[in-house]
Amino acid sequence: MSEIDIRKLLKTVVAYKASDLHLVGRSEPQIRIDGKLVPLNLPKLNGEEIERMCYEIITEKQKKIFEENSELDFALFLPNIGRFRVNYYKTLGDIAAAFRIIPIKVPTFEDINAPKVFSKIIKREKGLILVTGPTGSGKSTTLAAMLNEINEHEHKHILTIEDPVEFIHENKKSLFSHREIGNDTKSFATALKYALREDPDIILIGEMRDKETIAAALTAAETGHLVFGTLHTNSAPQTVNRIIDVFSGDEQPQVRAMLSTSLISVISQALIPKIGGGRVAAIEIMINTPAIANLIREDKVHQIYSQMQLNQQSTGMQTQTQVILKLLKNRMITKEDALKYSNRPQELKSLIQSL
Image 1: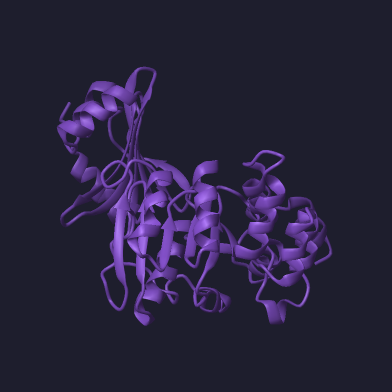
Image 2: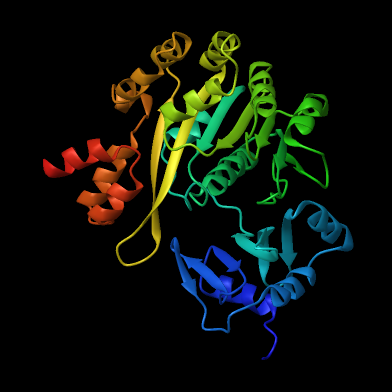
C-alpha cells in the first residue's frame, strides 16, 4: 500500500472547504463538510500509519509531551497549505488525530454578517463579553471579527490567551500580544494572573474552563479591562448559571454581584446546515440591561429569557428561537434541522405549528 501523505490530506481539507480532518485507526481518513463527516476514498489506516504521519509534523519536545500525557494540543502552520488547530489523542492504545482548519484571513464584521449591536458592545471600555456555543459553532470566528473591528479603529493593547493560538492578527491600529498555553505560559489561570502587569486594554481568554480562570476573568473585567471569553453553553441564561455554579454556595452571592455589574453581553451561537449546502449562524444575543443585572443579582436567572424578549428594538437583543423562525420562513433551513439545533425545541415546535 502506498503511504498516505499528511500534507496532501490537509490540502484536501482546504480544497473541499472542509472544517476538520479525522485520522482514527480502522477507518479511512474522514473530513467534515458543512457539519457532516465524509469518508475519503482512501484505504483504512492502522495505528502505525497514523503515528508515522502524526510524528512527521511535530518536534521532539511535542513527541515527549504526547508520550507522557497521551494528549497533545498545538497549532500547525504549513506554508502554501494553511493553519490548523491539532489534537492528538489515544484510542484503544493507538494514536488518533483531529485537525481543525484555522482561516489565515481574519474575518470582518461583513464576512460574518454581524448584528448591528456587535459594533456597540465592543466600544465598551471595560466588562465581560462572552461568546458561547458547542464545539464548531464559530465562536473563534466571531471573536476574531470583533477583535479585527477594534484593531481597525482603536489604539489598544490586545492580549490573547489561547490553547492553541488560532487567528493571528497583524497590528493595524492596535497592538497584539498572542500567548499560547504550553509555549508562552503554563495555563489560562497563570497567564491571567500576570496579564494585569502587561498593561492590556483588552484580554481574550480562549476558554473559561475552571473556577480559577473564571474568577480571574471577572476580576480583570471589574478592574477596567474589556474581557472576551468563551464557554461551551447553549443559551444566555445557561451561561450565567454555569459561571455562578462553578463557585461554592457561600461565594455565589458575591459572584452574582460581580457578574451583574461586569457582564456586558452573552452571545450564544449555533451553526445550522443550509438548504443547498453551507451553514448559517443562529445567534442569540443577551445584553446586560439594568433589569437583567437585577435578575442576576437576585438569583432569578430563570426570568432572563422573558426579559430578553422585551424592547428588542432598543436593546438589540434577540432569542435563538426568533432567529431560527426567521431562517425557516426564508426557507434557508429545514424544519428537522431547526428543531435539532434549537436550545428551546418545545417552544420552537409550538411556534412552528402556529405558522
